[in-house]
Image 1 (cartoon, rainbow, N blue to C red):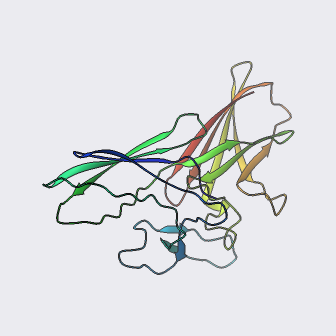
Image 2 (tube, rainbow, N blue to C red):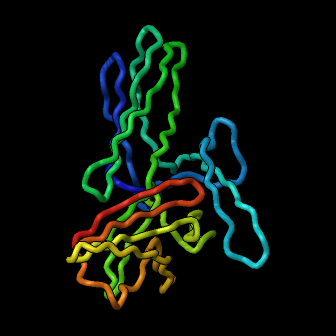
Image 3 (cartoon, one colour):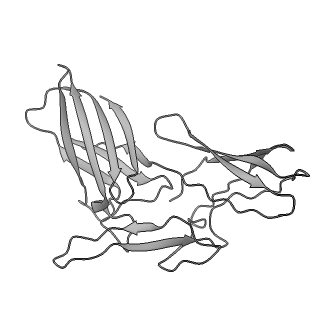
Length: 226
């Protein structure tokens, strides 16, 4: 899954242009995953898969993304200045908070270099609210939209790499912390973390969800008003 409505623009002394970022359903992807690093092609940041719970000790595995003709990307023709300069690649990524995440990647432009490939790392986890009767629940995904699952081969993002909390504010002003567990009640369920509401829980006013990715320190948050 790839997040939609990502906007790209490029700005240098010759002006600013919008860069198309097309997503084709069931065709466009994030790239090919491989444990092998390919010079000049693979992503410079690896995908770290922490060991799954097993009787015998394991070590973390590392994979890399490499693009092909189906990989999502923005492409444009830019005009170069007559001298070396620093330009800006501007990225707007939608979030569940209603405001986009705005990133600026500076790029060194050289009139003697005609082609450029720029990889922008998008930090954060994409949280969205979920409804389960009698439970506190939230969906947690990577910013690319990739789901959290029990582990490979379903996805490269195993549930045991994520810690999800909920701070519940009740009508009396008391905050009660909850630790959410990955919900694997159905094979079709992905990315869902939940916990049953305590029998002693007073009427809830709001919930603040926070998710952490252990392997990278990546995080995300979202508020829910009840």
